[in-house]
Length: 55
Image 1 (cartoon, one colour):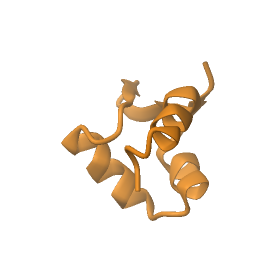
Image 2 (cartoon, helix red, strand yellow):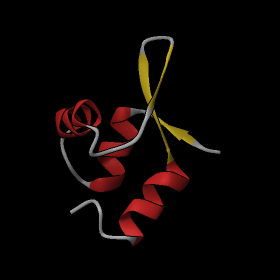
Image 3 (tube, rainbow, N blue to C red):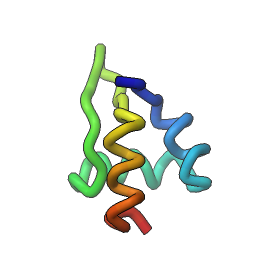
Image 4 (cartoon, rainbow, N blue to C red):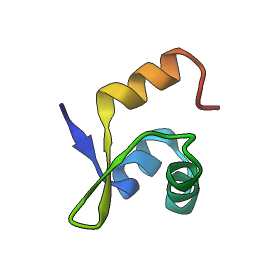
């Protein structure tokens, strides 16, 4: 499991970090909070991209 920060995820998806935060709040993107900071599993993110669940 490779956990990415909101900023790393935003860079990976080429979007603004606030969009990532909004998707996390809305449940469009799966993540976990570690010490109050969002972390996103890169494998889950890649799977969501393959399934076109993230546009």
